[in-house]
Length: 296
Image 1 (spheres, rainbow, N blue to C red):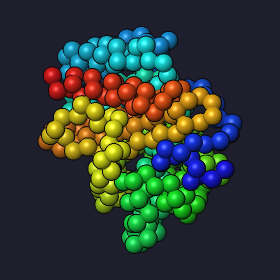
Image 2 (cartoon, helix red, strand yellow):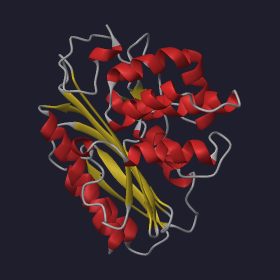
Image 3 (cartoon, one colour):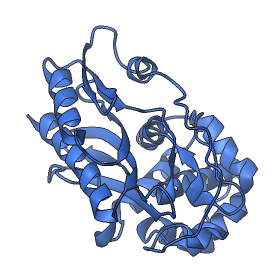
């Protein structure tokens, strides 16, 4: 199996590989309280055998988000997970944040982060060839570029970045199967926060480079979490879509929203979609209510 057959363009696959354990690694409370003041209000709404749990410093926002996200996900014929933060209002929401999903191409942001970390540790700049590969990988979701970088970075380099970033529940795909990396909504949100926060894992130049590429994603790939985003927000997004022989389409979307007072991010993952469009609709339904409630 070759990574170039996994995802990026709408390619069918015959991929068969044992999935990583699907047990959720971490509770909703851990996700919600790790960066939320104890005084924040909380609310939860049941949906699909689980709960959308939200916490916020802004009065009334947690129950509104919890109810509206659950309503958006209710009745969808696929499995999904969601994680969200907003620094301005001290808000966090989570729905099945520790459940594992095939990454498809959202893993390309992790690949980029791992490369940038290696470059920083080597005290050098990206080569022109690396600039070409990373640009194609993120803005066009190019699989060949991802194959090259995945091989260059190597398993140890990818794992080192995951460890430094605190993405403890992410399991890299074996061999060339980067698109079968097992990811969680919580870890993907951790990555979005890392890219928008001063820290020791990536310097300002590296974070700015990654966000710029995510801002320049091709127009036909700007679906997903940007749906309903305010016109004043600068959108940084990366999507993934992967059809498999069993379990339907894997459709994922992660992004951050900055500028003009906006400082939030979200990750929505899904599997078992009958079509790509169905998965996109699930993600966009949840994203729209989040953007809407934040602007109220």
